[in-house]
Length: 450
Image 1 (cartoon, rainbow, N blue to C red):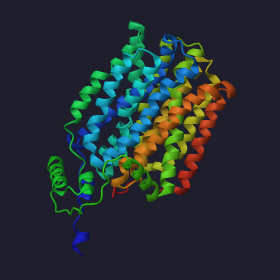
Image 2 (image 1 turned 180 degrees about the vertical axis):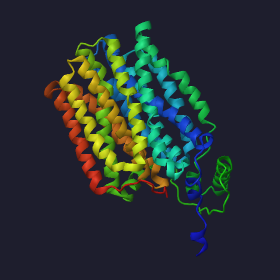
Image 3 (image 1 turned 120 degrees about the vertical axis):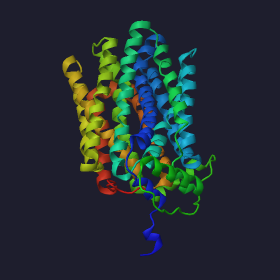
Image 4 (image 1 turned 90 degrees about the vertical axis):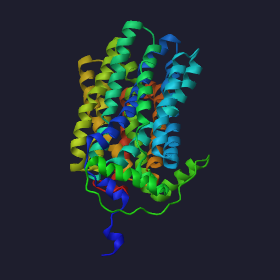
């Protein structure tokens, strides 16, 4: 046996380490907190729509821009930060996203008019849009291969926590202060604290290896081996590889690279992200307004939406238990279309409060089985040098759809076709996406990240 095959690579060593909560678990917790703020902010759009519609006398079409401005900013941030992470490193990108988000959230809370509010929400979205692709790339590259599916799936457990916190906290603040500004300012201080904690996270050794920073990579890998109590062993580090410089054109170079890598896989990633998250963002953005229109009190509409998000934590647990047993593709093929179907049922029974609440809870549970598996799956489809940008561009495409979709939904589909038909059309897109995945994308269960 030759030396090349006998000596494991540095990437293999990292991916075969034992799981330790004080090592990989700590990175999971820190990364997950940023993910929680992403969920909080997206859910806040649905809370702000009825509040600002009253404050600034907005039409439904104008109110749609509350979510659209924020989500389009997130779309821009997703691919910008994904490319930055693949260029300058996960750690630097990791620490900057929440700082930018916090700054523009404060400015948004003191907006003099609706136009400035939308501008500040867009900029806050640019900062926060980088959380998901950067966090997933970093956590995935520190996590041992055997636990990676469960850990990346469990990352999405932070989403229902953040979404539920947003709904419950906002309901309490509105009841006490009757001022929408407090719903924005309340999350800035914890976001800044998470930014400070993130500074202690080491750079991804897989990124350092690809960058050719061999001494730094070896130092991180050796530190991980010691911290996890693994048996030290010799490993190889490859020579420096060409890594794109950060420039105005680097994002487009990465876009071309992910399509050149495998256009069928990238098409599957984009289609799954776009369709499944469109269904979810439609519910988050407009459900409070839909429920209020159906006769729910404002406070009860916020609490019901928060409960829909909170029950999703059970869905994440189920996803984490099943993802390594069943595989990514089967779970997505079943839960993606099923989540859209339950939302159609909600539209039919929305005038019956008990039935509407029940089916919203079912929707929140099912969709949160699909979404964490989706994030895990797409993060595993690309090699290390394309992981941040591959995930980031898929996230960008979904955010564009999630930004424009609710606006079109409020302007045309809902008033012209009705609620149930509008949700059914979104479900049809999910069905097309999972069929494409079934034929053209591989299963990634237990696959090495090399």
